[in-house]
Amino acid sequence: PHQTRGPQPPPQAPPPNPWGRTVPARTSAPVPGTAHLRRLLRAVADTPLILWHYATHPRRIGAVAPSSRFLAQAMARWVPIPPGGYVLELGAGTGAVTECLLLRSVPPEQLVAVETMPRMVEVLRKRFPGIHILQGDARQLTDLLRQHLGPNVPVSAVVSSLPLRAFSPKDQQQVVRQIQQLLHPGRRWIQFRYRLRHEPSLHWPGFRVRQTIVVWWNIPPARVVLYERTTEPNPTPD
Image (tube, rainbow, N blue to C red; front, side, top):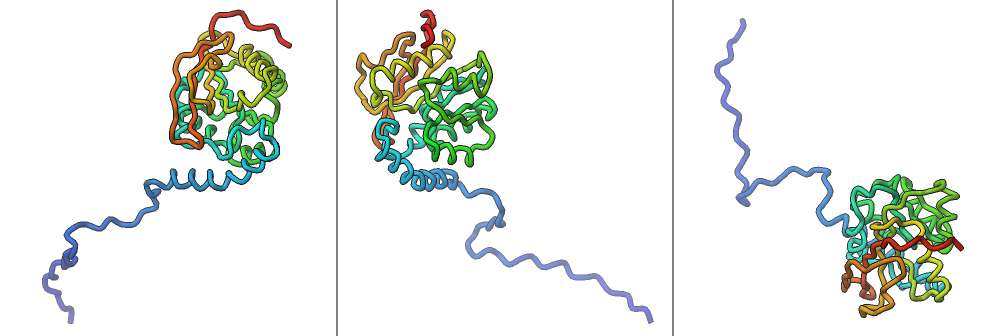
């Protein structure tokens, strides 16, 4: 015979949490702080490569460690967004500043990283496959850009980690002349240096100093200088 079941008891509530709070379920969301940890581990991993290049080419490498996150952010924050042209990074190294430029929302297709060391170029190409990475000499910058990106490349800003003070006076002038030729009046050149004193050597023909800041949380501490291209005539190409 068919038996009719009586009313079922209500489901029992889960036992109370003895700790007095709700324990959230485990999710796949990133743990806060892991991005900073990844950058720190990457900097540690990059240090031997930079040390080796510093020992073999001291005039091309200005420091014995990658630029800190604080220095890279200080440089990237002066890049105009949206750029309105290519953002040109000189002396990209292993990509400390490159990463901050992308985090600053510089479009990858408008970011051009120039590096002369072949092994560092390999590192950059593995880490940043979506940007333009050019191996070449900043003293022939206009020719390098013309060869890879075509004539009349519009450059919105230049971000330079080149150790200009380690260059000979002639090489310094050649690099600055190349930057002059690429930037229209009002465009920006961001450069850092390890000499902290504000002195006449901060000034270059064709540019005026808009702002400077010292980044103490770097090894060694560094001064970031924001230059603006003036209306002086472009120099005659070499």
